Length: 183
Image (cartoon, rainbow, N blue to C red; front, side, top):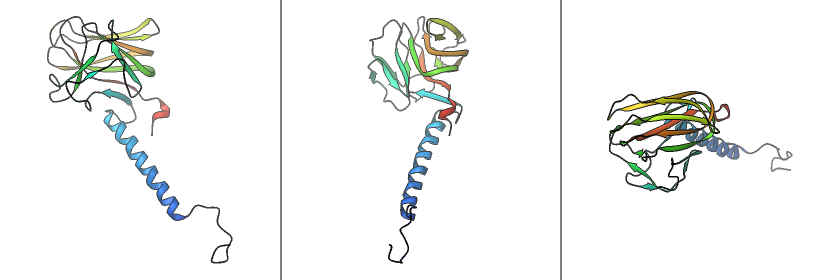
């Protein structure tokens, strides 16, 4: 019995509900901020390098947001984060001479990669399911400009960025958010 003479309630107290609500709000804000940072809330899961300091070398495989990145043909080579190039003042990944392999967190029906080219042939974005090439996209021959490469027609589980000479920079990679990740 409580002090008022009533049986104890099976419902949580108002203070417990208040703290549960605060926790839920904080979790929702964090999830919404993460989706907004991805570029298109509710539509895409993106990996970028803007929170990494320029000049850092990433030990392969580099894993973030479920994406796994390593050098193509050189899987043990360190990956460099740079700040020079388009877009100015933002960190991006220098694509090694042999290119990059990007394993996706889950199979995707489309993907985009924003790249800037500095000399050499324009980079290409290749999409694979197993060993089968599903789709590819090539940048226009334009140096010092951020371009979006898009592949469609998956599902595919792996992307590769092919770099034939020059020094391409990867700004970000995006794939559709699966339904269970939507708020």
